[in-house]
Length: 252
Ligand SMILES: Cc1ncc(C[n+]2csc(CCOP(=O)(O)OP(=O)(O)O)c2C)c(N)n1
Ligand code: SF4
Ligand SMILES: [Mg+2]
Image (cartoon, rainbow, N blue to C red; front, side, top):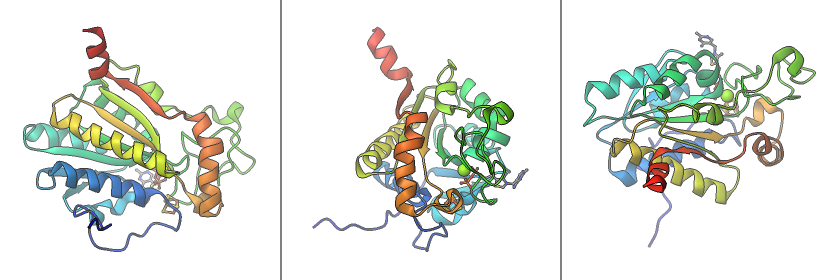
């Protein structure tokens, strides 16, 4: 009999996320992956500053808390301290990874660090009350763009997956979403592949997960999922942006 249970790599504690927030789904996919690959004893996660700051309480593996945006630098040190043994992932929001931590992200990718980054793009600074993020959409209303993001004044959103895929060092970059069952299944596949790549020594992997923030978007959980489908995904198309392994097989 198949029993739907919590993955062993997810602590049996209530998560603090708001109703309808998809951080919880993404946690589950990471935890299932750690269970399925049997790597809980050698995995170290790096928690960000953002709504997922308490990720260190939720994953049943070793966890380190990084200063805001610095997770890829911390992950680099952890990985290099024992590359054969440690499996290292970071879990970061768009404010953390694409704003204050942009330099760490770009250089970790350029160096082809053999780490796995889970990048949760909810187009807003959730934890601090809904300020505009580098990934907030043109026209998006936030606490700091009450009339909508004006690209003349605030510039354009950063498309992280497209940008990083231009770097020779980046090994595997995919954008996924968790707004429906099909997308959740694809997201799981991508996350598992990103961890497997690290086990196989294939270098830098980043999975961008388009996520929700119903609280700061000012929407019900159901409307937030619709907004992902109708607004976020058209601006941030899902798919594989870089897969060095597949490219080299095609060339051969
Ligand atoms: C050095 C520093 N600058 C700014 C902050 C304030 N701060 C905390 S979380 C955050 C952004 C969180 O947004 P995101 O990374 O997108 O995560 P989310 O909460 O949306 O999941 C900011 C700016 C901080 N804690 N430390
Ligand atoms: S504020 Fe937004 S990102 Fe943070 S837990 Fe609530 S819904 Fe999720
Ligand atoms: Mg965010």
